[in-house]
Length: 431
Image (cartoon, rainbow, N blue to C red):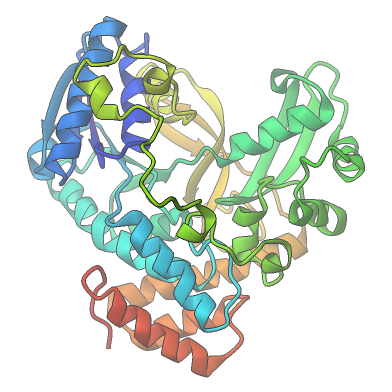
């Protein structure tokens, strides 16, 4: 089989996927070709060198390739894994600060809120040309996407291309870890089902695998009684008011809520104001990946640790027909896997994976209040995809005005104009 990683030069995403694939015992002896693609030649060379060292240590027979030309890598691809961005932190800071300067108290500006519109548009400028290449070069390949904003990017892929695609995110595992903590039970002993949208899921079921005992009410009670300081305030309120045990991180779920900023400071955690400044630069104590790639440092847990993602398990499920249950994949809700959400939206649901592919599971309806919150996001995403397709500035404005934190038309119009000018090198032209 052939696996192509586009965005392989990423220090976090690339390293994690490389470590997972090369250390997989199941992929040994199956003629796997692993091809790295990145437009940053220096970053690509670092990751390729690191991969060679991991390959040698793991004793795998996976064949390694690398190129800055994705069309050279794609022929024969069975799986394409994508996580792409340009000027990630610099542009993200604009996504956050500019809307805030216009009075829109959003959180993060990554996957929800007005900042997510521009993040998504930039991602589509990168990911859709990749998809068009997949359509023409390896149309049968399965695209496993990590590029954020996951729900928005995958929606556009599903509606504007013919590529077979699913979105992957480790967010659900944060919820599973929290459930294990609150119930003081190994997660392997529990039957847990969640559904919703990326970073905003609802735990529908928690049962004892052995006895079938329903533990969901007990889980909610323990969250509300917990005094350890581990329960973030917005997460607690979602459990208290909506009965919604969700991603236990306020800055993720708060992106989709009008009241999210009530529980989060306006200080952006990645900005310079969050870091101590010194008269003279203090060198980092963390080794660089270049030191590992060059052999100056022996490989250790920092470089060999698992990504925590389910990319390799899904590939093995398909290749070896394992028919395994996976807790969360992002897919189009085409068969109403979540009963009371639109079929045109992207949902995050459990799936069975076997030789025939990914089979999302029907989970029934979400509680109506939660479904209503998600439907608003679905409408925003629908408008944004259509705005991208038609290059309509009016539809972009409509998408912005539907966002729960946007409460001023004039400010929204001015913000939109400023952002389109500020980031015009990374965005399509709108009229």
